Length: 403
Image 1: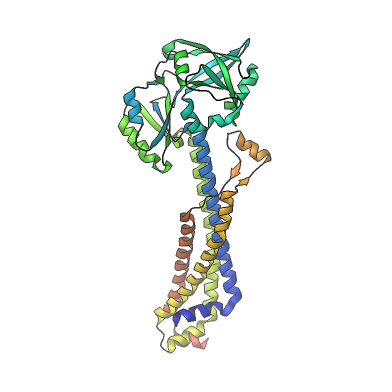
Image 2 (image 1 turned 180 degrees about the vertical axis):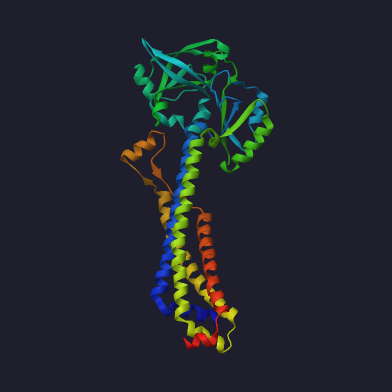
């Protein structure tokens, strides 16, 4: 009986109920789509950063992150590599990174040399897919991959000879000649203008760094276990090693994500505050219009708590109906944006590509995003429902019927 009465009361003023429900629906749709887009963009950004170079985690000698020189390196002993291969680590990318002079004839340019395991490097950074000329190298070759910008500056192409000269391990002189196997293109200009990849063993031999590494980048089975694996590795390795995650290696990106998240909560808060005032206005009008009715119901024996509960139920019905409708509308929108993300072009796209990222805004379909917005609406409705409950508890039936 009470349920039927509650539902009928809502539609006594169809226009007001429809407008209020539509405003709740609009707020839920906007909040879900905004948060899904934000989560999708962050997820895409994280994957781009990880596959760009850093990996989820990196193992260094302490001090290497602050001063990236070959002297801050470590010996890749079998026992150490076994310790790094912790449960949850999918693959390891051992690297020897150093700075050298690259030359061709009378032309010389500074560059970063990365000695790496070709197979695992490709698993982490998809390096093979960045080749625009030539082919990928193998671990046993005395060859090199050169970035497109550096190749142009030195007037080099595939099958030409590249000469590298630089400081080797412990102050020795490192040098070597390498056949260029392929030319790679990076989105970020700094990398594209000064990067050379060598097979790890070739780099170690050339720069007198036998079995020496500057870092080991790690890919994980489940990225959600990042903090647990990092903590275990720190405990397992001890001094003189440090284990950094991608957020610690790129604090600017982490700060950007935090600021963006805070901005979203501010916008969502303002949005829901506006909707809360609209819902509260509806409740006030419902009470004002039906004061005589309330007085009469109390006079004929309806208990005030039951009457207050009916009013709360009306508020909840409007809110829940709007929230359910909002989720229903949001689902296909978010699903579509996940399958076909927003793609930007022009100057905006160029700005993103300078940092090596694809200028797309994908959404991500997460159940918790839908549930969280529904819970917010429910809590908001319950808080607003306190007012009619308080009003009815203080209502004098005689005074109400006189009005």
